[in-house]
Image (cartoon, rainbow, N blue to C red):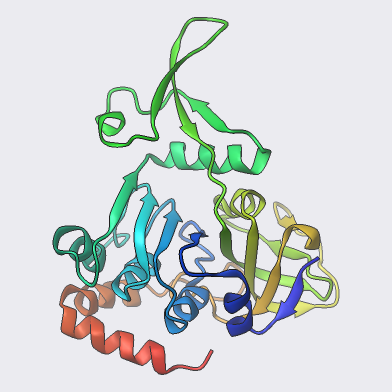
Amino acid sequence: MAEIVELADGVAEVVRDGDEVAMEGFTHLIPFAAGHEVIRQHRRDLTLVRMTPDLIYDQVIGAGCAARLVFSWGGNPGVGSLHRFRDAVQHGWPRPLEIEEHSHAGMANRYAAGASGLPFAVLRGYRGTDLPAQTDTIKPITCPFTGEELTAVPALNPDVAIVHAQRADRAGNVQMWGITGIQKEAVLSASRSLVTVEEVVDELTPLPGAVVLPTWVVTAVAVARGGAAPSYAQGYYDRDNSAYQEWDAISRERDSFSAWLDGVRKVVA
């Protein structure tokens, strides 16, 4: 059953040094507040997992929290490169970063396999690309029924999944709507989970297309108003496009990034 906690307590409870951590949210409901708290708590040697390691992982990587990244497509959406990610891979600053690259479809299927209790996923993707030659966790497999050669990828079962949602009730049931990406599967595949929400309400009102994570699949819920900013939370606030543009300048040089990082570490969650 989910426990409703303060954000700092939730991160301290579920995220440990050396963990494999998935912070998911596709364009929408990205858990920035939780990511910043991971930075403030100086977590180290994390394996970060995410379908699109945009600003949130650029920040966590730049803070020195990550030893490894499992991902599909990395960039600042609509702007350009992730400079802290690039600096870690190319120059080992602030520490070397090992990478494991997949396609979006591959990552989504890996989460689905993990959530389903299966050891691997099978798909037609990756053929015609050089990813199998670069990534050890992409293997050919032959269909026992048709003889067709397909691709197998191992299930993802992170130690921790962190997602943001619009609201939860007082029992810890979580409701999200809009573009929900792979958040549900990430939580179901993980050993522990933290969900940040805009608010806690007495009752969850049914909404078309909404996803409900029942309290028994969530470890902890924390209220973090504006916790997805600068991404957006449908029904609460819009995407801050200027923040994504400003991040390009902030993250481009180590000094300007370090000044930003000092500011995050001084904030009490």
